[in-house]
Amino acid sequence: MQQFTLDVAVDISPSLDNFLQTGNEAAHQHLRLWLDAKQRPPVPIYLWGESGTGKTHLLHALERGLTERGESFGRMTADMQEPPSFNPAWRAVLMDDVHRYNSIQQHAAFNWFVNSVTVGCSVVATGDAAPAALMLRDDLRSRLGWGDIFVLQALSDVAQREVLKQSAHARGLQLTDEVLDYMSTRFTRDLGNLMQWLDKLDQYALQTKRAITVPLLKQMLDNFDQLI
Image 1 (cartoon, rainbow, N blue to C red):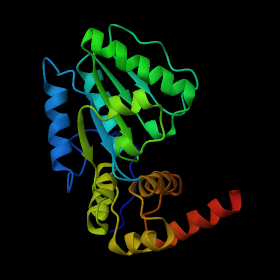
Image 2: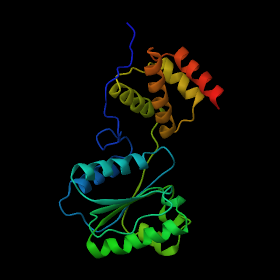
Image 3: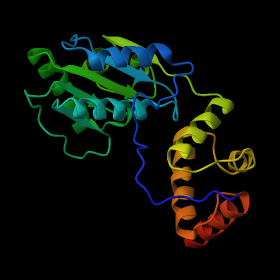
Image 4: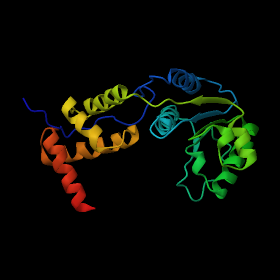
């Protein structure tokens, strides 16, 4: 019996519930307690680790949780050329990939830190290195290293497969071991990259109304190579 994609809406957006905790249980539990707290402590949280360890997933999960709770918050990314001014109504500020911030973004991030202390707003930030190793202005680097710091561990190949299978299942798809074996030989073993390819494979399977198999994956890659 073949399995085909169904044209139905499924919730695949990042959340704390669909984050695989293996190796990162302490950080996950800390963030869950932070999100559920009625009064959050002013101590900032800094998450760091190599690409694919789930830093952005966790930040998006917090963004989702704050939105569901009706709380106002600020968010800054390295792609934001003109960060907004600090809003005193914010309950939290989320800063992603601080290691990529330019001078303008670093100035805004420091301003957010200063104002957050004044109004009791919580700060959660992510980067690819420990605070002391970040190539940032000294005052911003020191504030990132002041609070709770968690190093996120990369998932093993087995754990990555479990994440991909769970994400596929949420979409109404099934990934066989054969397909996963082929993906591991063609794509970098960065979970973020693998999830992006799963998105493309999901869309292609839906368009072609075919089950996800190695031949389908090869066909999609051939078409993709022709486009680029």
